[in-house]
Image (cartoon, rainbow, N blue to C red; front, side):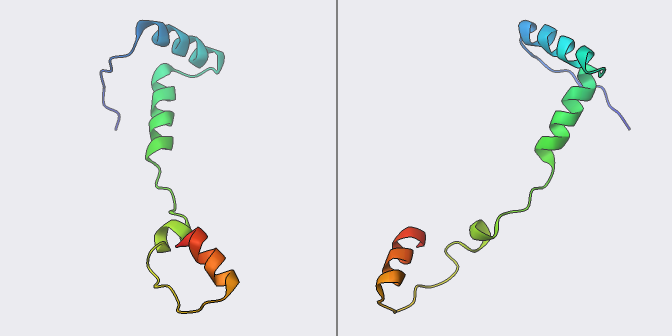
Length: 73
């Protein structure tokens, strides 16, 4: 079901957006709807962000471990 929505947008931007939509054979409402769909789509959280800070540092003392822990911990 579609519902009418009122937006306040700069006058110059509206005219540019209408020309853009017309050139792509779309409506301004269609462009806004597609943009909002793109913005609200759930995006998968990268593995590194999900697990960052979840593991405790090892007691190892190797040079490689020190370099990696400085970079990632």
